[in-house]
Image (cartoon, rainbow, N blue to C red; front, side, top):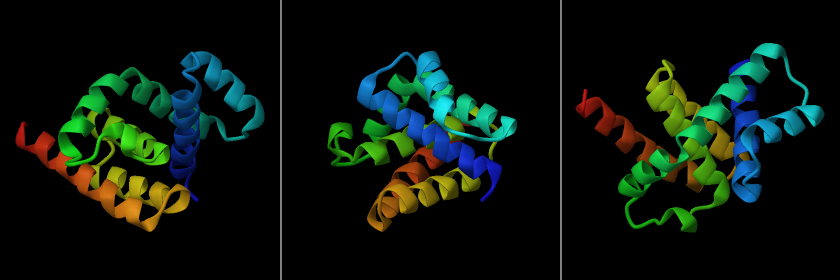
Length: 136
């Protein structure tokens, strides 16, 4: 498993915990890394993804609500919501290629959610990516 994929898994775990408990992000990171072990680069990338996804959560939720036809965010599985938060942050605010971001999100869904979730998330992320490409 690549270091970046592992970092995305760690970021997803932190996001899930953040959503459930609404802990202060810096305190959550500190306690998370007390039990999780990772290389420095993996830890740094995970922290960047987590912090960015939390910082842009409100904006991301508005975007997701617009692109998830017939699905309210609160009806989505918590894992799926957090995969979407993570992927939307990475699509919009990093230089990672969109195809990589979407593929990594689908791999997270397959591992932590379900095959059906992967197809659902793919549709939403593809629509968000196309909309962003159209506005450039």
